Each structure stands twice: as structure tokens, then as C-alpha cells.
Image 1 (cartoon, rainbow, N blue to C red):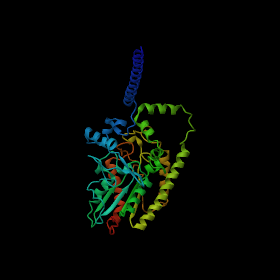
Image 2 (image 1 turned 120 degrees about the horizontal axis):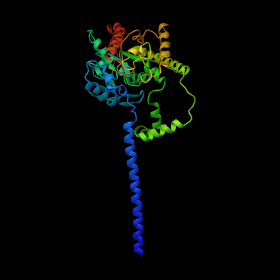
Image 3 (image 1 turned 180 degrees about the horizontal axis):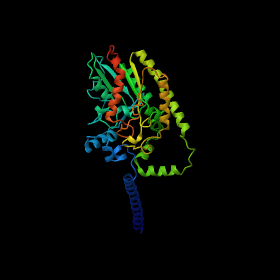
Image 4 (image 1 turned 135 degrees about the vertical axis):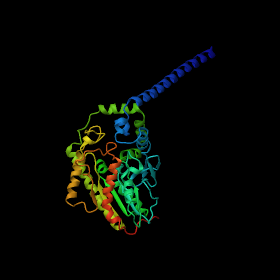
Length: 394
């Protein structure tokens, strides 16, 4: 009898184990299938303009392009090419990338037409240009950035020392980060002849906190796995967002007064950065040109924006902070408070009835060329009689 009881007990254990294993497997399978279904039906947080606006609308800002080429360009720009690498001082920089339309080389510059080699040579007049994604030129090919057109325009004038332009625009970066990147190069003995900054949009967006600050902070706090699960597992994200929506919400923030305060902080920081940069430039003997860029939220009739089509909602950030900040900068400019190394480009769109954008904020090739033309016209008097290059590499 004992062997029979033992066998019976073993059979019951086997049955319970099999049932539990089957239940766990089915639950796991259901979880996987449900997440796959949610991934298909939930709206994607995709910045690719094709996803956001539709290919038919997007094709309108790429005249003469084939649809397959536009899709390839935007896929490389938004889905494949937007890889950032850590930078010890600027927080992040462009990672190397070698694509058909987007090419980035160490230490983080996007190539321009007739790109000079790195490190820069003292046989050239070396120009470094810094800024955010509008300088990097998301949505257009390497040779269609403002930096590339600046190189192209400069090449049309024979000079003893050829111009060499390096595009250090980094998506999401603002002025302070560009300065930090430049100071790192200076610390390694790489000094340009001219440093250009195209500022405005990201300065008012970031104010004084670089992008990815929260993510890096949470990583240092050991919360990276939680963030990964939230971003990559749709059911977890959906559940978390639903619970968060049920919690009592604090008082609404971001009213007009708050937006103006943010703009005041951004402008004050930019002006302090400007003084620091000018002091360093004077000490090391290179020139600085600080340009305030055109943006769709300021002095532009959005009815002519090919993608926004007259509407801010769903296309652009609420414009109060940008308009207030730009008005304040223009007043300072007109008072002569921003100095001779400042270039006001923010009114380039004023009273013009045409599209300047390939997506919500990034410029068309034609507008990039126009911006480069203004920058070159400002620099031309000193480039024509450029002194011996300060560029030294250790």
C-alpha cells in the first residue's frame, strides 16, 4: 500500500505542477500578445514627420524628390541617425554615423560639402558653428545645412587661407552646452579662428536645464530599469499613466506670467554666457559671432507653414515664452546692448508669404542657404583679411 500512496502523492504533485506551469505559460503568453497588440494600436511617439503628418503632406516640402528618397532621408534622420553619445562637459554630443544623407565624424561634427579633415589645420581659417538641431539640420542632407552652405559660399572667394567650416550643431542642445563643448576643444589645444553660435529656440525651450537631465539623474539613482520597462512595455506604460491620471493633480502651472519668468531666466543666462564666451575668446584670440535665429513662433505667418497650416496646436509648443523672449532680445538688440558680435536673424520671415520648414521647426535647404548668406556677409570683412590661424592641435 505504501508504494501506491507514494505514487498517488507523486501524481497529485505532478498534476498541480503541470497546472501551475500551464497557467504561468498562458499568463506569460497573454502578457506578450497583449503588449504586441497594444504596440500596434496605441499611437506611436514618433517624431518622424511622415508618421506625424503623412507622406502626402511631407512630400510637399521636398520638391523634386522621389517618395522613396524622402522616406529614406527621414528614416535615417529620425529613426536611425539620431544617436547621441555622452560628453563629459556638454552632457551629450553627436555619435559617429555614416549614412547616405547624414554623416557624423569624431569628435561630433556633421560633415559639410568639401569637408576639411580633422583635426583642423593652421593652413585654414577654421570656423566652428554651434547650435541645436536647426544647426545640425534635421530633415535635410549633409550638404543642405546652413554650415555646409557657409562653406560653399566661402569657397567662392579665393583667399590665401581657405575657409574650413565644422558643423557642431547637436539636436536638443542649447547655448551653454555649445560653450561647454567648445571649452573642451580649447582645453585640448584646438582653437578656431571663428566660433559661431545660432541660438534662440533651444535656449527658450531648455532655459537652464539640458535635455536628458532627468533621465541621467534617474539612472544614477538606480531607476534605469524602471524607465526602460515604462518606455518599452506598452502595458506597463498604459497602467502607470492610468494610475497617474487618477491621482489628485496640483495647481496648474505654465500660465503667461510663468512663461515670461522662464523667458527672463533664459535671456539672463544667455547674456551671462555671452560675457564668459567673449572673455575666453579675447584671451585666446579667436572671434565670436552670436546669431539669434528665426523660429516659426515669432514674426511668421503660420498660414504659410506647410505643415502647421496656420495652427500652433499639434504642431508647435505654446508660443508665449518664445514671443516674449524674442521681443526682449530684440529690444536689447535695438538698444545696442548685445554688442557688435551679435547678429539678429529673427525677423527674416517677417511679412514673407512662403514656407521655410521641412517639419515643425527645421529649415528648408533654401532657408538654410539664406541664413548662411547673412552669416557670411557679416563675417566677410574679417575673413578677407584673416590673421594667421590660432588653430593648434596637441
